[in-house]
Image 1 (cartoon, rainbow, N blue to C red):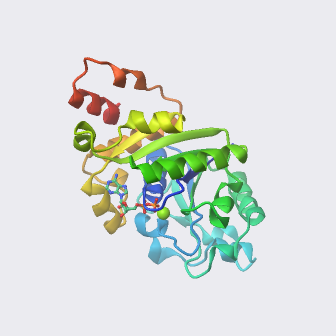
Image 2 (cartoon, protein in one colour):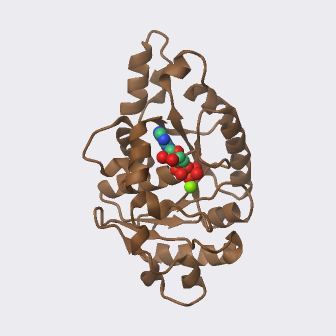
Image 3 (tube, rainbow, N blue to C red):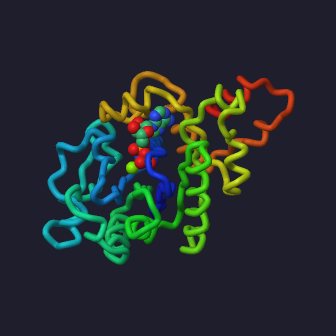
Length: 266
Ligand code: ADP
Ligand code: MG
């Protein structure tokens, strides 16, 4: 059975698409078959982050309109063939698709035997958000450690729960340890206390993520090791049930650096 996970946040620009691309790649590197669904109709960019933009012929909208078969719209990554993209339309509005149609698409993908269907959700809590979560059974909430993002995330947790999505995990993205240390940024613990959902991972703010975005090569695929790359691999592990003891983060005598290292590398 496919696990159907929506990557969502409420606020825009916090790293949903980055997480979708890298988590998909990290799961594929563990041998899983993964399809990434771009549910950000009108403002798609998952294809860009994956470097697959030039290979798109059809999108989910043509599949729904019956203008092509689902298989014709799917784009398989050449670097990591276990990853496939179902692109969103670029030039149509979010109203090009409704929740029932989205659910039908996802059900078709589920019947194709993917281990993971990961849905990249648009910002906001309107139609696009509702479509993106319609078929999901799990959610990963991405937030940066900023009050506006956390408040939006909190709102989204409530909406997901109301939609009967019970498995909701937290990804804190763009953490700046030095700012946390200086009390200028919320800590992971602060964020987690507010949202009260299980922590699945922490990704540091790192220029290499921006470079990878511009190159169309997710950090997870890069030959260079980096903290974000390790963080995404860790999240994939946790998603698959590998145990990570976050409680150790709170040990009072642990040095700050050791704590951060533990946070990222474990
Ligand atoms: P969203 O899909 O939530 O709108 P994106 O994934 O498109 O957000 O990310 C928005 C921007 O933030 C992109 O330019 C991306 O490169 C940058 N970004 C995301 N995560 C990180 C990170 N951990 N470190 C540095 N930049 C990041
Ligand atoms: Mg996005």
